[in-house]
Length: 172
Ligand SMILES: [Zn+2]
Image (cartoon, rainbow, N blue to C red; front, top):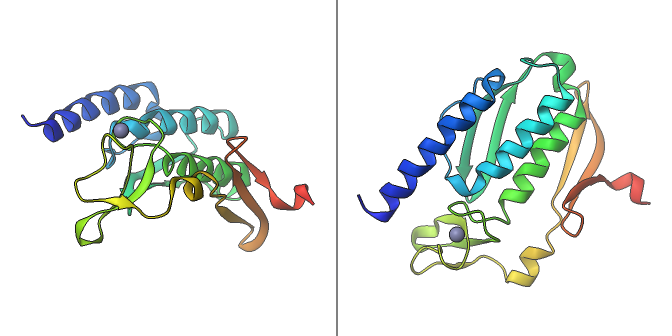
């Protein structure tokens, strides 16, 4: 096995343990590597506190364009619960700052052929470079709009200094 195969073998074993610890989410196979699993576990713990047990099903967990994507489904009342969207958004914001392989602070990088990944310096793909400077990326504050009954509602922003998602209106 080469390093890459070994990393995937370790990741699958770790993911199988998470699937056992969180059976109610019916977790699919993770299509991302183990560096992000603590972020996903933290999300699952939060979702457990927010929504009735068994009401949320995680449909897909994957890396896409160097970002974590968590797709889920649930009854209408859970879909309208913005705490769920905020928790998922927070996890995605944390992942884009963390190495997908080891979980250490990471940067979004672009490699040959335009391949995007989020990696620490040690796991940076050969010939890749950060999409933006480390300073810019550390200060990124992504925003998300939540919806209530299908209508645009609040705007939320990830605050990296607090590692928290805050309602933009509340700051004004
Ligand atoms: Zn790493």
